Amino acid sequence: MAALRRHLLPLLFVLYLVAYLDRVNVSFAAAGVSRSLGLDSASYGVAAGIFFVGYVLFEVPSNLILQRLGARRWIGRILLSWGVVAVLMAFMTSAAQFNLLRLLLGVAEAGFFPGIILFLSQWVPEPQRVRTLAGFLLALPVAGLLGGPISAALLSLHQVLGLEGWRWLFLLEGLPAILLAFAVWRWLPNHPAEARWLTSAQAEALEQTLQRERLQRQQAGGQIHGIGGMLRDPRMALLCLLYMGMSTGLYGFSFWIPRFVADALAPAAPTPMLVNLLSAIPYGLAVLAMLLVGRAADRHADRRWTVALPLAVAGVALLLALPLGGLPRLALISLATAAGFASLGPAWSIPLQFLGGRAAAGGIATINSVGNIGGFLAPIVMGRLMLLPNGETLALAALAVVLVLSAALAVPVCLVALRSAALSGAATR
Image (cartoon, rainbow, N blue to C red; front, top):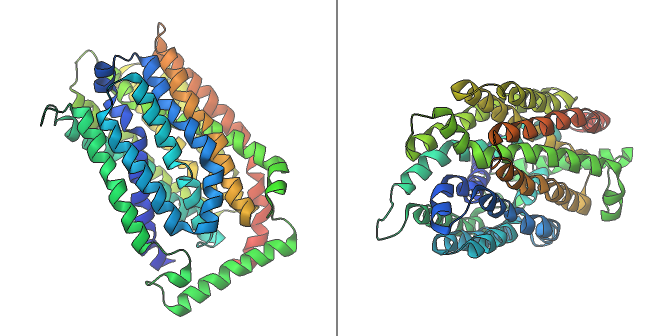
């Protein structure tokens, strides 16, 4: 596991970092794109959210193909196609092109995230799974942490070679995905036996440990392997609803944090560079929170509280922020962001405890696909709310309600972890 964390996890982390930057860099380019293409906040929200239409439709087929072809070939294909679309966004000239390219970006990236979750489940034993997932998912807040300064620097290239700053942003943040596709094809091992950085004894020991886990669960009769059984299991519906609520909250933060920062600093008229730099603060707190919660989740079989409690903290923090303004409101929004991200690692470990084989491939993709409807709706609804009087407060109130309801739903959903903890414990501890 130490070798895996040194050699495999950094590559996967960088891949997701680039993916998330390409997905949310529209939040940093919003002002320039809206000005150039004539968009209001509602139109921008539609373009930001339409990404998830293509993403949702192609998630499950993509993950099933990955299981058949292997992670190296399919993840490399995903990287190449989304990199090309991301670069093309630098040359769009109309709102229609913006919507089309965001849709295609979702199609191109579909299957990447659930594919990596499935891939890690085939490498990491249960007792170390949450902290490993958290290490991979750290790319989300780190993308926010680095996204502000990087985007500010790229936006400062305004009119270099006659290109607007937002065009440089899309161009230079899209190229790394294309280059990383070739790195994946060369260096990503499909299985422990292919890893050059593991000895044959280490690879065999890891495979045996994972096999013991699978056999223990099969003998206990608690694991689903078929697509039909996965779709009929009521736990799937609950997990889809839970992740939809989490996605709504997290993407509500991600696409609008620069706006919240600018409003908090008003009427000082902060520069775009200062706004983007300060937008990194909530994500810095999220990195710390994810590490702490990930370790806590692996120490305790009962994961209800490592999912439900962070979500409740996020929702309550937003409710407390409603009557406030300026820096106090920004501080509570930052706390809510950190707490919301901290729930991700424990939440994604839950379906891996009762799904295996094709059911794991299809189930993870289904949860992510249905859940990301929240990512589609959040920026659209928030964009429309912000057009209303006192719109920012209304938007934050909506996010707060969704997060509190998600926290309440997480308690019964996470009983799945209690049910299967004993199965993996005897096999692996």
